[in-house]
Amino acid sequence: METLKIILLDDCDIFREGVQLYLEEILHHQVIATYSNAFVLLSSDKLPLADIILMDIQMPGMNGFETTKKAQFIYPEIKVLAISNHCHQIYLEQLIYSGFKGCIHKDQIYNELNIALKSITQGKLFFGRNIKLTSKATDK
Image: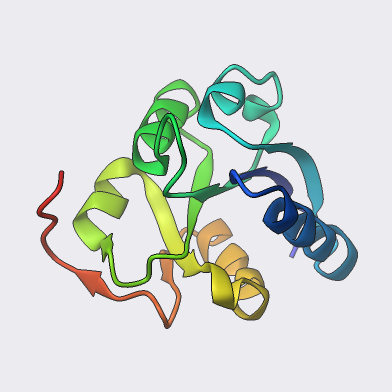
């Protein structure tokens, strides 16, 4: 797989640092930016350069669903992979409607991230094995 340009968006500094190290040192991808909130991402000059955005779903200010819709409205070619601690609260319809190409539980990120990146760069969807998908969201 070719080197991907990746942006990380998560409100936890330690998580971002760990994933960045893994992406760069183990998977040999280029992390072009890391952000702690959606507002900075959406105004970033790095956004059009990204192949993939790894984005937390639950963030203060603007959640990942709204952020993904806005980012893909501006740059429709960008692929977004959701990362979440809430494996029991993920709704397939809401993820796809928002523009996500997949979702990984944070506990499985080091086991599944490489597979997920390969899948979504090939135009496939990827949902980690710990993600419990349901067909209806009650809190749209």
